[in-house]
Image (cartoon, rainbow, N blue to C red):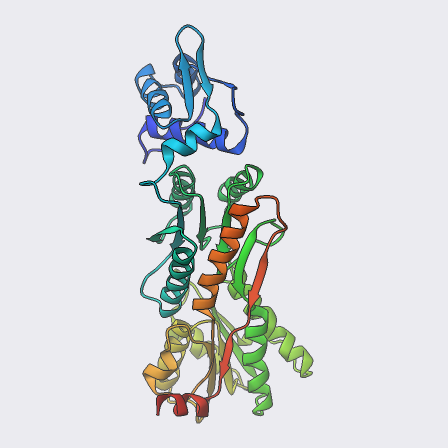
Length: 366
């Protein structure tokens, strides 16, 4: 018996599961769909929710119900005609937050490029849990959009299997900002190995020999690749990679003050830090100042600066910024290309970030 999730109506869950089976090809056109009775037995429920699920599926063009014979998967053309969104050719972009300057640039680029090509873009700003992300992607897939671009927030096994079903059924999607190692898919991301490498290399060139690394959890390719770039630059300069100079900020771990104090307590403390984002850089600067250090006099900071923290704080820093607007436009281009040709080679785009030194920031502000 299938275990039902507690946070979604039974009929809606059954309907979504059937849609996914149809879209992935597990139930091909013309295939018989389980009856109300069979579904009720499968899910351990009464026939009322299974009846509603099949009725909705018929109204939405997914199945054809023939009295005396049963329900069968409808032709794809019928589904597409019924599901069209207000007569527009529609695509979607989903990202975790609106507050970030970089995110807004990505969305703006995607919207403008989509509109120029005659597509109607729908935008979703949502922070999602594991289960909620799976539900959201599955429902969006079945909403009638021609394709979607999105940040993958939780690459858990269940969601990755859903994306593989998208791929097998030739449903167009593009991953933005981060990708999944070993998975065949289109993506447009920053060359984060190069970003971490460039930040670290500049610090080495400025005479630093002990360079700390501050990051959020290394649980996605963006932070992982920046860490790899940091290691690459140290190795190239003949400097040791020292795990005790690495601080990982976690939601349930030690406070930022504790982490920074621990790193700075070493007999040979770091004279510089690379931060994977400007939120981390802000916490680091605050902690260093509380400990009595001057930035950049005693400790120099280099960071990925998507929210323009360096300019706002007026503290001289080495920064690198992602090409958000270009990422949005390229994501729309890749998505449209996939819609036009579902069989083409995967497009895996790495965009260079822009490095700025403190004197360049001063000139830009002036």
